[in-house]
Image (cartoon, rainbow, N blue to C red; front, side, top):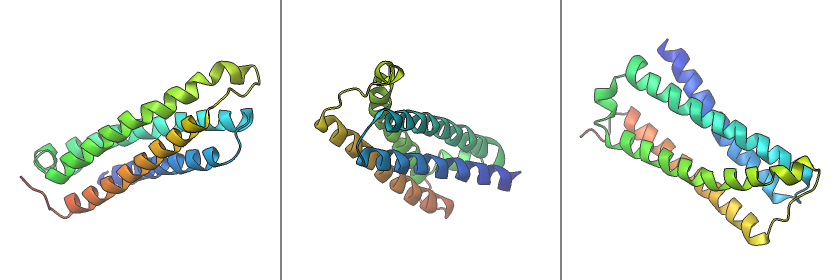
Length: 149
């Protein structure tokens, strides 16, 4: 069971990363209603992936791996959780922006999106991806026993 839950956890994490990359790609081209709807769907999938990462991760911590005593006394695990929380907080901005487009998109009209808002969306997505890189580093260190308090 450990291997199955590790696989599912990693699969959800890769889905999370890939949705961020897709959002970045969709924001690079000209936005039309179809592309904006793709962004909304991709962001929904991102949220589902994030929920799965958390749920599967905590199942692994409490039931399938070294146990909560190990993980919650590891500096890199705590940093990893902190980075995940920061990424989650950052992700609120794009989600709110994409949701605000809903009314216009239902009418088949592309909402007006200021250039600075597009730049900010891209910056936030890049910051989220950078946070994921930090999480990967923490995971590698934690898995090898570094950071025990």
